[in-house]
Length: 262
Image 1: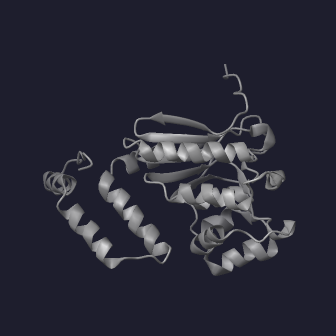
Image 2: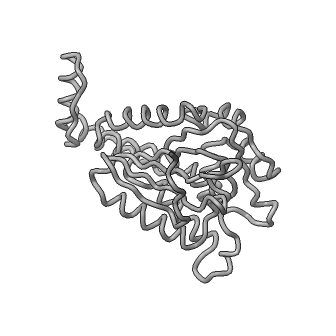
Image 3: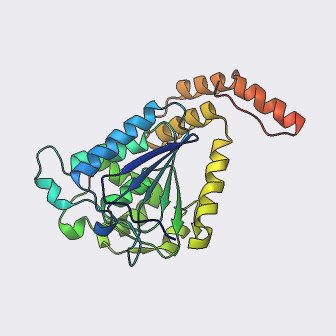
């Protein structure tokens, strides 16, 4: 017997075993994001950042009963009329997700449009369901997109891909996105759960401090804020850590390391 459908709500946060999962939860509205949803997303991101035992965040969506799964239909543009919201607030949420301490995985289990695409790009890794569509309609609506979102598009799509996304507003197929290297995996429904779990297991097996510091360094390089002295300091710190000592010992003994995050 299938479980009863969950009532629509703002994004839902679930914490378990070092993994935080945020689920967009308005399936009947194709998971369109309202301002209250963005406020909740920002609060969830802050909660995850403070939870030191969380090492991976998964961003996904409830697509139950949708005739064609949609991860996110983008931002409810009616929210632009609400004081203190609009593009600037959406940018704040996407930037907070991009800067999150744990590794972030987008489990893209449906098509994605508009601002929803930037939430995907704000994640470190992405697995996607076969058959999805991706479209950025900003210019078709008369909107110049916000700066950090453009930067993420150029970083992940390349200049040519970003031009196609914004200057034509044409959709991308899953195969086009895969060819651009956007996905860690493009999988069928049958393989969805096992593929995601395998990725999470692999991430949780890594040394926590090394992963988190390396993520910071990669982001700084991506944004053109690379401080070589700081990067070398992180190298030195990791080389003197108990985790690195454990990693070397495990390698020599041909066993799996048990990292403590120290």
